[in-house]
Image (cartoon, one colour):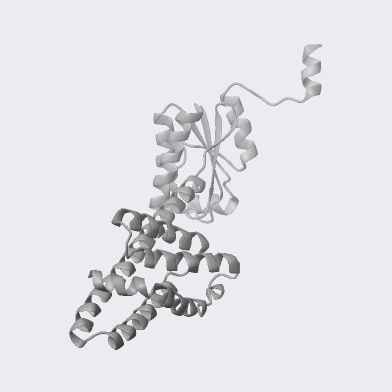
Length: 279
């Protein structure tokens, strides 16, 4: 930006901050997120004012870092970006009004272009950093959801359970397969129980994914037991002609666990049975 415009804005900074502050005070951010305290809102406004006017004499690297931190703050507190962009447009009008009154037409035309460039640059940086921060947040959330959508839970030594809840589509089937195979290696599992109690519909596609998962489990040296087959699910499987004969199936997780213990040469006995054996 032209040094004369920088000097003009900086010399009148306190005046513009006061005028702009009154504009920011008109923003009712609580309507977007009622849990935001007034203290946080005021801190955010103050940080934004300091950020924008700080770009007048601050290096590019430091400016980018400050915009990044501010964008992270907006994302964290669920504060809308649009209101702050609108406030920059209002600041533009205030400064342009003063430039028009205190400059010649030639100076005004030149300064106006520089002012537009400065404010547009601030808007672009803010939007870019906000978009990047939002994308990073979404990616982290998706990663967390993937981990939660198909967890492999060790219940006994060498025995794990994968409870499935909700619809199993192609994308989720890939996540299940990755979590299943990685978990078997990590927990050194010999038997894996896939619990479909929480899967509302088992059609041909879902069954196909389950069969593929079972085959993959066998390829890494473990066995798969399909549990949680409700009567209506069993009827659907029969009507569709789906062949699950190569997979061990049990109606409940409890029965599946007993079978898994037998497959690993173990059983659950009561204390009384243990004492009688010892005697």
